[in-house]
Length: 412
Ligand SMILES: *Cc1c(COP(=O)(O)O)cnc(C)c1O
Image 1 (cartoon, rainbow, N blue to C red):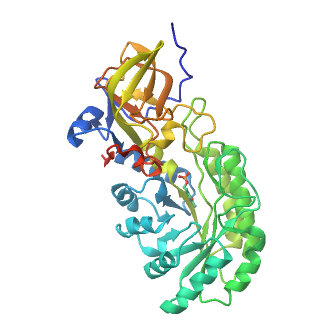
Image 2 (spheres, protein in one colour):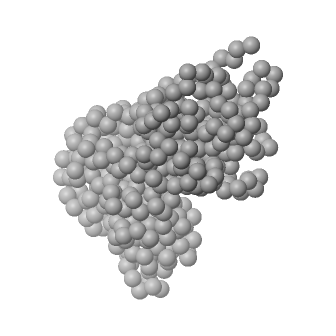
């Protein structure tokens, strides 16, 4: 019986191959697994991260600052590496503040968003001197109260829940009723109240979504974001110093998806900027990206522990799975499970292929890394590589589920 393979992915050509071995940071997956002493692990390629930032610099207008959203990959070595490359950090938790403070990124270039910041967290953020992106009028009042107690004037920005929704966004995080940000309609009255409070108004944070692979949708979002900023600018108590226009650039994960073409997005930004700058002449404009910067630079490597046939289908059972890589298992926001790009890292050029299912060690049928993929023929001891794993990997996974060993991370 022949099993039909699932469609293939965009070519994963970011990592070179030498003698049939995948190289990450110039080192084979096999050597990395020996150096670490075990599998599974995530490996991130320092050079690929650097090249991503260079690509963005090449396309983004020079006066758009580039921020890294730490939640995509908070590994301290990765954040440290990026501290020297980007213009600022965006945080989504107080734990990320601790990682950011371990780098030499100046505090006024760090901003902190996220609903449900506790009083303790707000006080920590105020003391650290970072910009707090306020998610509600209630949060604004709490910040002002702590500021009075601490005798300082915190830097704040309003996170705006836009009055438009983005088409074709993988994850919508703005528009409609949302737990994020202050609805655009009530921003004017919130700014009115802010005037009477002991707060240093810095500007706006407008975030509309994530994982977008449509150039046209991103261009439309930029235009709407700029227009919204110009409208809200009518109500500000003092000149806008910072306008964060969100990020949202996606990377290809699944068959049929292609890498974004940055050229039209860049041309559109160049076209839109002069009007924006004529209205907000003092504003530093920033875009915040996570996945686009680190996602393609990382792989997840696990080892084949068993190979079995069940009723005509071949199963490679590995020591890695859903507990380390929830997204690749299809359980992190996917409606219909699709395969991540996968390869056999030590048999990249094998002439013999077979259609296999790759599963993990967990006692749940959800623990799937590949479903009916045509891959190089693999055996026990071979290494499975899951591409596009540099963002929302280990820290987005239920690592305690089923009490298997933790996986390692390495920046090479
Ligand atoms: C998650 C998040 C990001 C990063 O999104 P990516 O898709 O990784 O680029 C940026 N900003 C905010 C506010 C976020 O919540």
